[in-house]
Amino acid sequence: MSELSDTIGDLVIANRILAHEGVLDAYGHVSVRHPTDATRFLLARSRSPELVDREDIMEFFHDGRPTTDDPRPPYLERFIHGSIYQARQDINAVVHSHSESVLPYSISTVPLRPVFHAASPMGTQVPVWDIRDKFGATNLLVANVDHGQDLAERLAAANVVLMRGHGFSAAARTLVEVARLAIYLPVNARVMSEAIRLGGDIKALSDDEVALNAALDPRSPAIQRGWEYWARRAGCGQMLR
Image 1 (cartoon, rainbow, N blue to C red):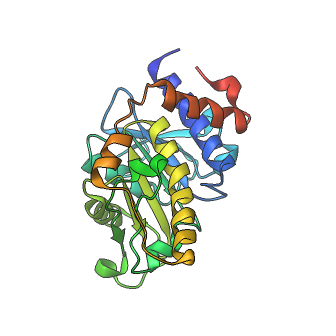
Image 2: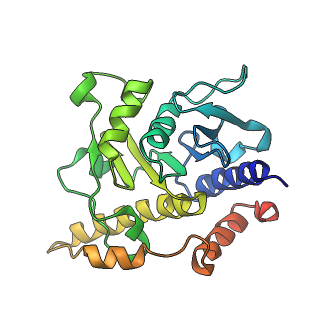
Image 3: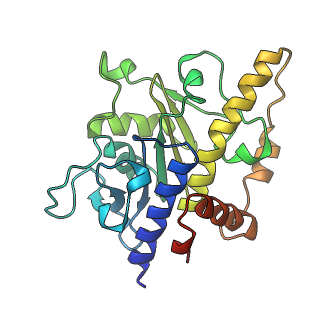
């Protein structure tokens, strides 16, 4: 199979995994940079992630325009993905989720911090983006390039940005890594919320601990083991390469 065909297959798996793990429901989405043209990215048409198949994948320019005359409706918030790819050449996969475990940290003054090792890729500093700061009262959706670029600017060099009253966007080098990050971010939020409920000081991971845990090679057996596990749980193990 071609590199593009392989990438499309992996993107379908990522959709199924994130839906099965509860990171995405009827809404939210995951994308990947085009494997041979860095000015483009791949994202499903407007469809619930659990149902996404190969034929649903569309190709876009960074400004959110489809690269072909495709009449199918795209996700409204495709500008999240295109703007992050345009701003961050090191990023090759993006997830946008409305996880209710993470949402409280988007509206609270309590910062979300990594508190267990598997969540290390989130980084020690997680910025919060408030669309109201620049655009006033909106429906909170990232509906155009200006919104997307402002979000990407707030993400800056981080791997996760919380979106006030909306959800989060996560970015990584590969689809496998971004899926892992998006799965463990809500787990981390639940663990931290429970620790806050217990009371006392929260002992978050240090910069050094995060760096050591986040340094895994995306091709390592440890990372690939998770990808296979989640794919088989989601019922798409037969699609693995």
